[in-house]
Image 1 (cartoon, helix red, strand yellow):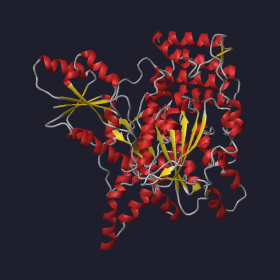
Image 2: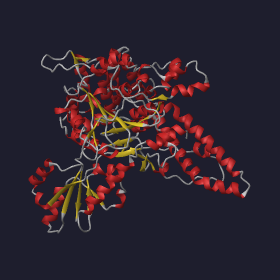
Image 3: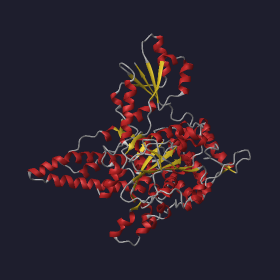
Image 4: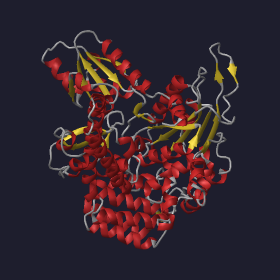
Length: 637
């Protein structure tokens, strides 16, 4: 690791503190209930809690109808004391429901303030499944309050946000920006700003098919709370025979398994236990095979070299390295098998037709033909979420769909997939989302401003051709995550934190440069945070509000100090920019922000979100009921 990378690691925020705080608060909450306890856990909390503590060590029952259980126990004269821990805070609504059910007097109500959960060393999440739907379909702004409280807790732990930049949020009284500007004690942690992005400023990105390794695993298999369900034969294979046979040979013989028929086991995708995951997760999937082959060859050489050791000292060194080699070998085997699961799914006609439609819509190429292609997917019986994603993408990029064609498509969807999907279509067409808009709008419909797709595509340099001459440019730009399309959300982050990356990319600067100078060209000193300067017109064209706030710090005596100057040049120190996605973010956006972070000296990013999403989960959340469950924890003594 270079000295610059070491400095970056030393000055990064230790988000594992959030995990320790959550674990401690859970223990304190459980200890506040005297005697032996049985934890009755809402199923939606099992995953998030598993990221902060060893849930398997607790005696747990999962159920949703707690009040029925209490009634039965009272009827059977069982002597229990019930304590209900609400996450993340006490809810008047829950108290009212318990009162209506006639069990409020039997229950003590308290709170377990579970907030940001670390998913990796640069990603923290509230792990809310339905934040987008609750906020923009149901009109429930609870998630705004919870997000604001979590951000306040974050700056109390790591230091204040000297600047807050918010784009796109329109809520009553600007709750999120106001709540995040509470006076805080000064801190030695160097956070230069907080960037808050409302998911609606970029609805295009989650509708697209993610093309990074981690993104495709999420799209095609599913990642939930950093866990993926895989065949047991992949997760728990027989121990490799290191005495004979090379790493490359054993990897090439990894079994091809059927992800639907084989028994499943959850696997935690974590860089702390999986040595290859950090190298693979953000790669475009087209590069994963080459990376796995390179690792296999390296391990093969390591085994051969070390097995030729003759002296006692050499043998001792080999034995010391053997555990690491075996761990890396197992990681290689697992990801090779996982790639073999994904590859056939990326070669289906529907998958490739969907990608073709996406690329054509992003390029505004023969848009009428793309609508016809979507109709053909319906007739072929493609998954509904694929059809809905493409239809919404067409509406946003074109600026709406002709009324006659849209009504015909809606009718086909209801007939093909069921009339229970009518609420979904109505939600997508609601003025708060406008993801399915007719052309022209009915006179009685609210006249909402159209999303400025065409102008953003040009001004933010969103689309890069995928011809061979542009390949180097794609690989040296955030657009690698979609093979030529740059996420609008991350371009907006670059407008604040890496302005040069919006106007051009390192590939263009490196053309004609010698090998010795390329490294110095590709990684430049991070410029000071000066807001949207230079991109004001672009940002103002996006529907929603743009808010910029500068905080004052307060020392321990309570006296005010001038705001931390984020405008001073960054030289020896490394600062952290926090990017918060209200309504969820995708794995591709995380990969793109990590790419931006690698290009700068002196700045790293901490990605915060209400949850990890993709197009399928967005559609699922807006179907009737969505992912069910009000998060709550109950303990019974």
